[in-house]
Image 1 (tube, one colour):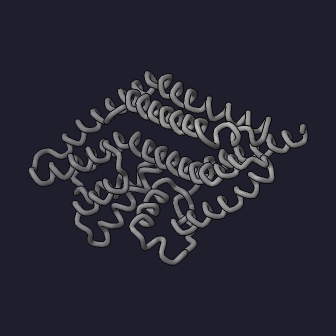
Image 2 (cartoon, rainbow, N blue to C red; image 1 turned 180 degrees about the horizontal axis):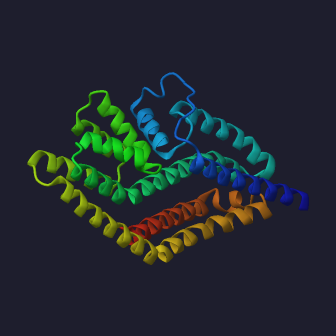
Image 3 (spheres, rainbow, N blue to C red; image 1 turned 180 degrees about the vertical axis):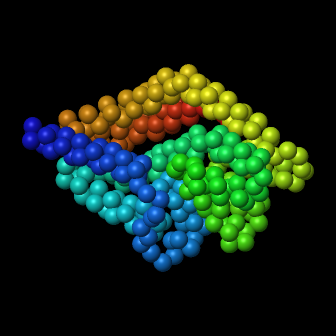
Length: 292
């Protein structure tokens, strides 16, 4: 029994290390992606949306390769879970856990990329304002900001500058930037530039004022996230306690959850409890959410 628990503990530690390693690799990976083509996936609408998210998150895989790797992890996770736990419930939950982990890694990298870009936008607005005030056009100002800005916002501006160099209209290039980066601050910056361009006025002064407002928004959002951090952490802790307790019980006595929760009133109670836990997490996250 002790050897069985030791093997399970080692497997759990290896899985945790793998997830942390993937997250660290994604955070530090370069923007160019390794593309492995599987016919039909990249051409579908959901495949194109996945490709945008992968590129935005900096994951060095195309949508085809990402789906293939996830499917391979699912196929490997089922027999591995059965070999380590001998539990039907944990084996059935293995594919869900793998898919949830892949989605969580992608979403986390995506959020970090958007947050880094949003944090650099005030400096971008100031650079654009200074370049326009010095007599450069908006196209030239964007190219100069792309050359002088740090990563990752420099890569996004370089893409806009490349589209402009190929003959794209400024409105189309900036609209594409706003679609690739669905962050409120990016939308505000793009809207301010386009409105000033259409209506006229001192665009350098407008960008300078916008930079100060973005700085203020960033500071307030940081303070609000700090004030609601305890509520968000409590929500996840409360939601995780039943799952961790059930996992510990199943590891200590394999099959006990199947006997108690697999039929009749036990199954009904499990469904009701899971629904209440899910609703509670959503409510707490909604209460603690910082709206733009």
